[in-house]
Image 1 (cartoon, rainbow, N blue to C red):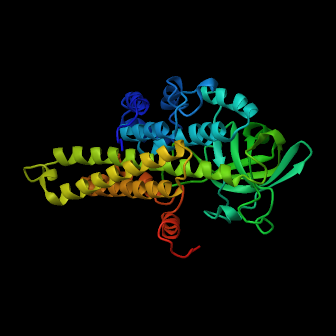
Image 2: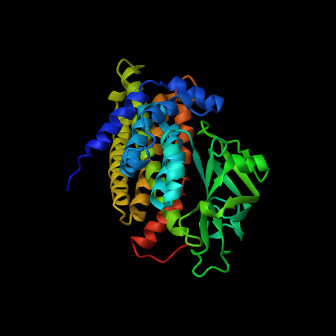
Image 3: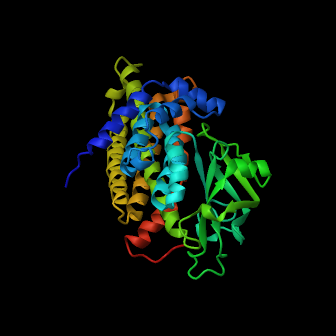
Length: 393
């Protein structure tokens, strides 16, 4: 058993950390306050090829895997970006690059992957619906075959980054859930040209005002007779559930990597303050009431890192990783939240001041317990699949 990271992942860590160190908390505060994409960081990631790590070399990428993507995201988060790092690695590197590299046709790979690697094409992912929530089986967005096209009608919610995206990785039903046998049949994943559909007036979106993670908008998306060429099906018609799991498991693994990096960053901020703050003549970090909770969070972060790396390692080898991805997401999200909570407590009343980044960290950490999958559903999965308990939902 070897716990050393491969040299590729070590190089990724060093390269992404070098970029992250250029941007202080003031930069991330401004991006959040102005609700703007961290364009400067994104451009540096693209220029260095740090966004295209999992794209095969023949298409302009680095030919690496999900493990390297996870290390890159963790490093960016820990280096200063915190929760804002997630979407820089989820939207295009994972939802687009990783998915198309594994499930695209040769024609799709040739069309999309070089453009993604060059930073000329961005993607987003759409599955969640207002009436389905986490129950993906019940989505109703429908794709109907019409000659050489599919015609798509439906509504999605909490779709992040569609305002930037060139293409949307869209999960549809080609067989309604009530008619599908089993119900996991009848899914078809489509690559939708967002800008063309917007120009046609068949796709519209509306940003949702939200508490945090404001460096990217999350949107309601409305699809009204969107026409998608039939050669833009990703995977097999009616068998898109296989593609879907190869999107959702990496999403959870990368969310976990973000939580690990986030936890490291917030611990650093809290410990710096605990070393410097001395209202009673000695640093507050010398008090066990401050130090022990922070030490416990450090242990949680390290455990989450191990499971995150294991889940990514399994996915890269094409092995089942659903439970590991869920456990990684569960533990990392909780570690990030505990880190933010303890940082808030360590800063005392100053945590409420926007002079410090703690308030932003507190807001961003909380949502990780709900997305990309709710904590309760993760626990239900573990109970059923790891403990053999009856299905609860």
